[in-house]
Image (cartoon, rainbow, N blue to C red; front, top):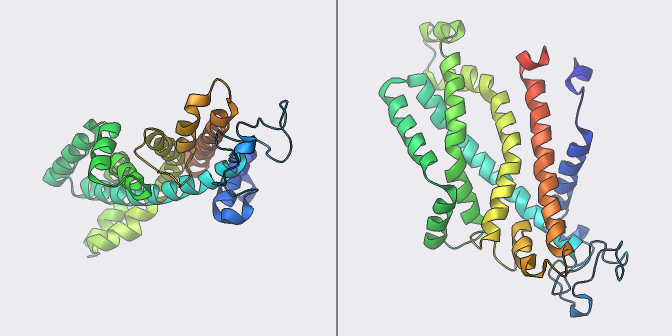
Length: 279
């Protein structure tokens, strides 16, 4: 049972995710250089495999002589923090609303579903522009935007799960036995949708990181002197013709992290879904 659970485990994506997590948890102590240290003498220094590069700055330096590898490692901290809080709050709010809508049905379900449809009809970038104008751009604003964007995604999926579960015999027996609704929610419903929530959260990691990078690239997210992969892309876009590595390296970091989280999420879905495990 234990061995079959880990059959086909995507080790390379898991290694990428672990590396991002270690860099985020390690903090400044793990950085080869101060991520914000300026050294104009090495501005636009190429990576070590190109002419003019060396092993001191493995991935080269940007227009201000800041070590790109150190900035990518420091930027992973923002990505992990945003992903953790955004998924925690959006998943919690969406799951609660989806459970209420699916369990009670009737006018409660109709009202909540209309609210979900209204939310999903608002473009996320438009919502980000409104919040950026009303709030100070920064980490907290990014988290709020992502939570307001993705909670409806969780709510719609969890609602469908609850509608299928509430007709089961053990739910009817619990009602007949006089078990209260909060107890049914926690003991009988939440425990049965936990695997779904874990899979949804894992699959959303890449979306959240990409969304945060997009907001920061547009100037609506993380601000200087904080470091974000999206902000690195924005700073380096004007130098793409003569220092392509400054924009390519953080782009690769975003791509690898998002791809790895999606592959791991797909594997986790296959492992946690009993029907897929039988195939």
